[in-house]
Image (cartoon, rainbow over all chains, first blue to last red; front, top):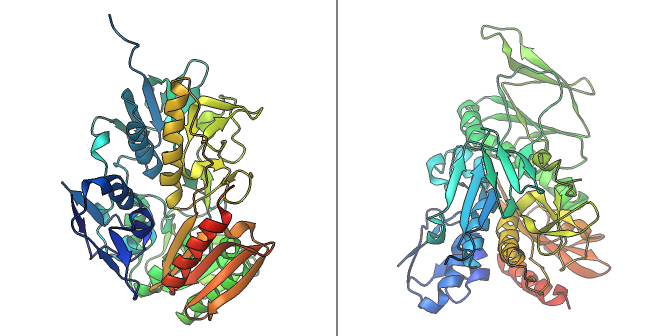
Length: 62
Length: 412
């Protein structure tokens, strides 16, 4: 599963971090860092992260 | 031989709550027909940018449509017609276009509509901010130098004020409260927010109400159909090219008047988002989601409340959809308590106000870190227990406190 975050849209709300902490994190400066590939077992959590992104910046490419 | 006929769920409301409910029904294994009815002509779209990024022109209005899960590709969208009435006896809703939709299950996701000024006032130059069309129209009038009077100092009023300042407008804010965002944030943090607005040139007229809205009666561009000034209840006259009415919202529940449901302030539900009748009994076939729902949150107490946060439609729909599917099958819903962590944000002047928890149930507010006029974290306590936090900046501290609250407040 390939994960794309539109970093022009991302505003570092961090909601994705609560939903899928193994994939999304905020660094020490509060900026988003994320894995561009995740195991299929993470799909539900990554879908959840995409749902709760206030800027709707996360997309999942199969 | 055939099995039972396919069931139909009607989702009334095609904004975030309606979308998440449709997705939730599919995730819960509902294979029947799902029909989503929405009064706006658009597929579900994201509203928070309407007072911020999109209003400022930093984000295209066309970019606001929500991503939808593939599971809802087979959902029927009935857009441009509202639900006019519902009968739980015959299990039918009637739409404003006259069509009748029978249902087995009903999701109430009709949300809120803006409250408008009740004063007589010209139509031209007056705006609310709830729909895409509202924001597109207001955007066109927020020209540099425009005199903007914002009535209401809640989040929407404050965000529009900040956006208008950023576009070079002159901004007055009028509201009956003592400080902006008083009800959600309380007096101490609200007072600090007032100072931020005033530092950016906004003139705050607090403890005041509009008394008269005058037309543009003089000058080369005189127009009896457009606003020209707002006169306050102390006689102050504020010249206005634009009046923004940010007076809060009311739940869209009139269509449920004949159902016998408790709709005193939104649709009252139990902890599974099942609508309650006037005797307090849950309906197995009707759930409510989003800011139209008045539900208890076991993190805090058993008092049902409407919550107008962006996170709520998603949280409540994920709870409601499996409960409805269980109800339609004659089964009991998941016994786990419903305890979503509330969360909201507001971006003003490049700073983000971020909150977690329930500020409204607190009795004491303390600054835990920083300075209210810079970056800070404020703790909202009830009986000495932390029940909410608000911060500007300091995200690592806020995230840590959020995690601590989840551990400490988790219903036992």
